[in-house]
Length: 114
Image 1 (cartoon, rainbow, N blue to C red):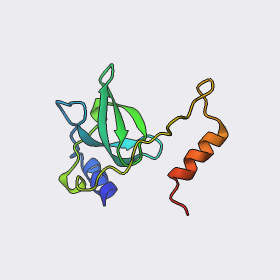
Image 2 (tube, rainbow, N blue to C red):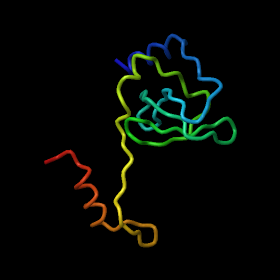
Image 3 (cartoon, helix red, strand yellow):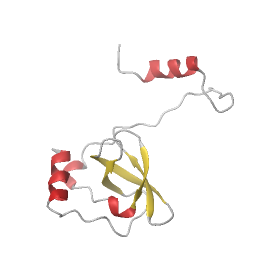
């Protein structure tokens, strides 16, 4: 329903980019890897009319043109963000790289499998 809604708006040329943006604003944008619509939140304004956004349901971060960030319809605001930032306490990096056993340990805690 979500993707269909925004695809229909895009195809009918009814999508109008957000204006007067502020850090923390919610909207929608296409993720560059699959070209599908996702809910997003503005993190920072970058140079040359670019913005940094986080896709709130997956946690991916991208830099987009300010003209590629659109209003989020009220229909899609009830569901809380599905991505949750997390980290491991007391984990130290060696030369800025996590060791395989640290990654495995983390994935064991963050996995939905039983």
